[in-house]
Picture 1 (cartoon, one colour):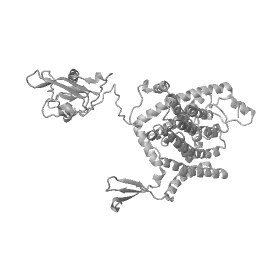
Picture 2 (cartoon, helix red, strand yellow):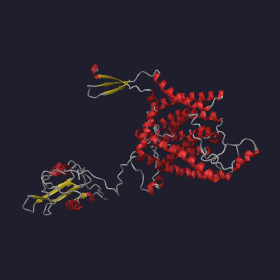
Picture 3 (tube, chains in turn purple, red):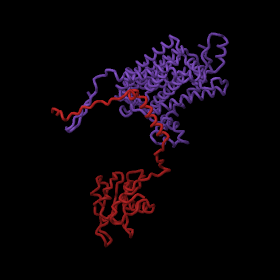
Picture 4 (cartoon, chains in turn green, brown):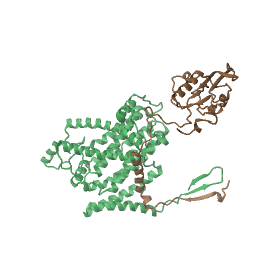
Length: 398
Length: 183
């Protein structure tokens, strides 16, 4: 792992954190705009041109609102929870490349010198356990949710937190397993190396072609990890008021929001890095210098934002899962599929077959899962009994 | 109570094919709908700049109508305050100074905050003296301000007639604006 340059790292942290907070504020604006458009409305358009200053107004509102700490809460944990939410979300971003990077060097002195001379668009460059670090830290967000729900001393919060812990723990597994295929293909956990492999191979070397099933599983588990619809059971407004953040107000509520949107940004970056080649794009891989770097950065950010928009579209497309559906999706569908997918990658690697074979294999796996689900000796067929002729018709699910 | 067998209907859960169990085609169809709406026409009425088009039978602020000589039409019969489910109309009757009727309202106060805008006063009135207008942006800073007395209600009549938003319905046979064709 190469040395850090202290001042460059500090500057990167300041710039990235500043941008991150701004982006999160504007994500709320984008979310509201997209929600409005999908619902045939116009959306926020009063504050500034096209409502562009709306995030500023929202931020001010969060700052100026009364910060209520309810009477019988566990004060320490109540205050700690939003802080954990933000800290873990921001910390996970430390190893995520957000612009052009080069793979960490070998042992040659020249290579190391050259590596040190190029600016890496990542806060902590060259972390060899990159993806594991991201997963380890983001899974800590469940602490924020559980602590917030527990400390609030409110039934809605507690129910939200309980749902959330079960959901997050279940979806960690398929999330981790779905990217193992990518890790095996690359032979490295380092995110820069993963990008570098795909950039060298060009657009047909992006892992989406080798791991479409892995991508699908990762996308679904990431939606669940971010508590976004259709998996937003922890904060289902219609059922639980606000879920774990029911009792939070003002800036503490804002911090939960911030953590959540940071999570969305981080996972969108991860999706691009793992499956869509990071900053690489046909025609720009060879570009060097400032212009090339900026172009790569823009391409990366565009790819990332298209995933964010996709998240937001999915939100208005799919209804919320019921809890048992959520669990059975994770345990009965995604985990077995991820396992089989992993075995397929291993076989292809072991016998040295071209990895593109994994594309049809993934398709077969998806269709096969649907076919098997039809044959599967399911639990006793659910039959509805409808009684008529009484004062109240009843529906019983057997 | 035992359930008669005739009352029971057994329903099988609908079978879905392989495509249905894949779920992905259904999600793509859903996304198509979402995206279509995203770029489709918008229905928002941008209120302060754009005034809403109200239906002709909109029930807004009340007014007390005047007759051709500019006198209040009301004959203080208490029909409206009797019909009012919210008890928001307060009338004090006095002998009429005019020869064509027995009584006239000395005071006529409507509590606009208490009113539920059901329009039953309008229906009850035998002389078409009380009417609901299409004024919807009723605001005030105090409760007292929202007690509309006779003068205020008459001035609402003057304003709405001048603005042409709510025509006077004097012709027999026309029960309400709602029965007239939309402009």
